[in-house]
Amino acid sequence: MASHFVAFLSAVCFLSHHCLEVRAIHVRGGLRGSNAKQDESATSPVAETKSVVYINTNAWYPSKDIAASLCVPGFSASDKGYENCSRGYNVINLAFWTTGGPVDTAKVWSGLFHYFTKNNDFECTTNKECQKILIDKYHEAGMKLLVSAFGETDKPVSQGADAEAVAQELADFVTTNQLDGVDLDFEDKDAMENGVAEKWLITITKELRKKLGPDAIITHAPQGPYFFMGKEKYPGGGYTRVNKEVGDSINWYNIQFYNQDTTRYDTYEELFVKASGWAGKTAVQELKEGGLAMNKIVVGKPITRADADNTGYIPQSDLVDIFRKAKTNLGWTTGFMGWQVGSDKDGKWGSALNDALGA
Image 1 (tube, rainbow, N blue to C red):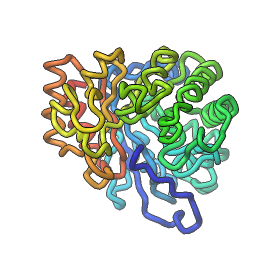
Image 2 (spheres, one colour):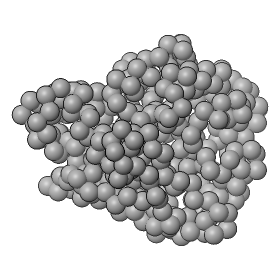
Image 3 (cartoon, rainbow, N blue to C red):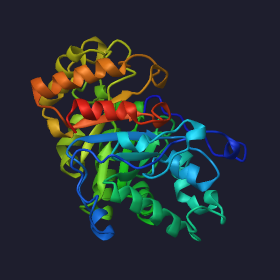
């Protein structure tokens, strides 16, 4: 996200109190598969209303606290402030996989047994076994677990990364670590403004779909201005071109409606009807009028003011009212994305927004 950070894990952070909570989830939005057999739940579709959240920090030993911090249903880490964050969300994005390898919670998940240690609460003895225990709990609750790639600090195009090679490495990470899919949080601003990002994004999306198959979830997390800003700003066509060429391979967009300075996205009018400021024509209704399907527009917001670098934050009560109005006036119920779960340790922010959308 525009405010994402990548903190490489170290022996010091292993003793830190980063946390994410998990307990029994209240399944929302008719997520199918919550009562299904395990082999069926892995391929059941996500809910019509998506409630997405990023996890970029986590609790540490013991293993049940790590699980709680990853929003695994059935676990809590009350002494660390986390009470049922899973109740607010049905899609978890682990941040981040980078072209240099996994960091933050993506690294923890990829080495889960190492962080659990052999004396763990789940009695698992291998990485795959530990992952399978947790992924089954997500699936039984109708939740999906993805890895988010890149983030603010990884600039794959500007760094000269080959799209096909990156797709292969990323697909291997998803399958090896038993994940439901991948989110591309592409923030290579220079590549977008130089008109060279679009071809790269189109290629990696095609390759990921080919390698992961039709049941995998593939999402993108562009900033709002990446759509429909014209070739003067994005000579390669921006995400308008990406959506036109590979939109059918993208399940939805976790659009970052924040950190855009004079384009504030902080009222119903600005967020859903007509955006002002430097990035005009990028409100939800304007994106629809430009050709982006309403059922692919997931509205991304910082959970607290501290989660935004500049503008775009909306207090929870105001955002609830805005979502209700959007549902009534526009029929929009696609869902929301929150950055980041450390600011919603009890899942109440997500739950309130789900309620507003009737999910």
